[in-house]
Length: 227
Image (tube, rainbow, N blue to C red; front, side):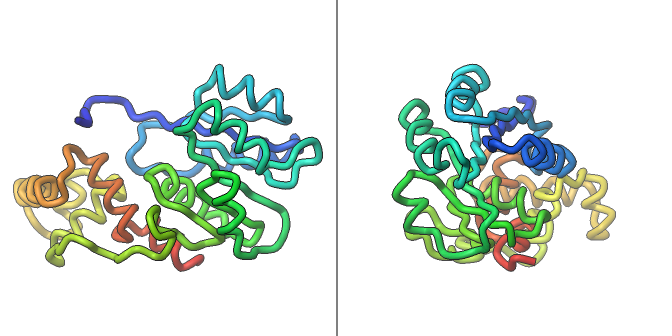
């Protein structure tokens, strides 16, 4: 069961043999907002042995790995990392123009691929999609089981329920949601309780996760549209 009082930390490992690229990507991710998490921790590695040592010490949740590193292809590194930590979620990225890499990411065990064409604003949606069990390939969020675009809203929600869920996923406070929807804070609490029961989750973190996975959050909408 998720605990509302638990500090949610997301750990991300970046592996790239170019110092400026590592620094720039880390800075970009640190400046973004991460719905559902109190804060994120990011560490970087520059080669194969460094990445293995960082995996043991840092214990990341996500790995973002350059596929075309000079020393060792990123796909080979992912295979090794996932042997050591099977639950690790990993995305490959490249400086090459976009293409369909679904077969390749399946072979090496990654959950996604990002090309240089991806808008910076879609990087966080891509990482969150993968963290929550989906796949991401060049601007398209894919369902884990079929790797096809999922249905938008599997559970039937009313228009107002969807609005409240979207605002919760945007990390809005109860008071802010009430003000934006012109309803009382007590009504917001009623909708939140109804959503928890209907969606089978136990906290706002669970609601945020559901919104991202099923296209209700604007983060997911950006990722699917590639805008």
